[in-house]
Amino acid sequence: MNITGFWNLIDAARMDAAPSASEPGKAIASALVNRLAATSKQSVLEFEELFEQLRDALCRWDVWAAAYLIGGGCSDDSFMDFRAGLIAQGRDWYERIAASPDALADHPDVIAAAAHGSDEALFNELVNYAASHAYERISGNEDDCTFHNDYDTFRSTRPDHAPTDMGEDFNFDDATEMHARLPRLAHLFLSRVEL
Image (cartoon, rainbow, N blue to C red; front, side):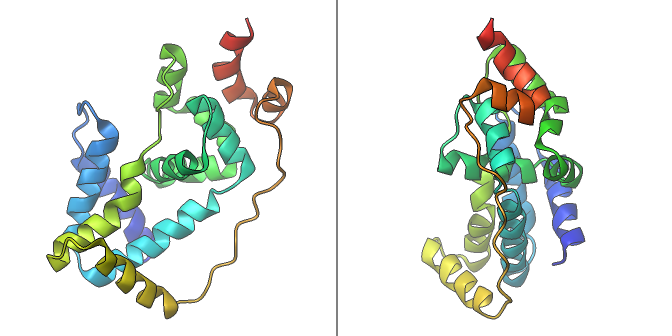
């Protein structure tokens, strides 16, 4: 699977997910598992490799700051879920956010979250596990170790990837800093608090 195939699969899963689903994050994850399970073990392993590369590329302080604003705080685990949720938004949103996390101020789910005081927009833990669940379904083996062992073997044959430069660290609790670095998101999420 190449990067185009990866994004096509994400788009297809997004189309499959019921737009009126009460739990859209769960719907996209389930649709992604179904799509992946219809491929092959090799394709699932290749998908997981690309997924990890894309998720790792967003491991930056500015993206984490965006997650912190949207989520009203953000732990290490939650940040992983946030990056998975960003991938699930598709290539266009992913590339916009990679270029400038402040672009999330235009995302309809983020706008709605700011208006309603919700702290769950775009966080999607289940997408992190889509490949392993699909692999289990293909192999007929519900032992999670099978996927991880096979993935480790697969990765041992692949080139290593350079670690992501996280950029400059800064204080997420400093409102002035957040307004300077993510002005539009800070306006959405901090202006109400500062009143």
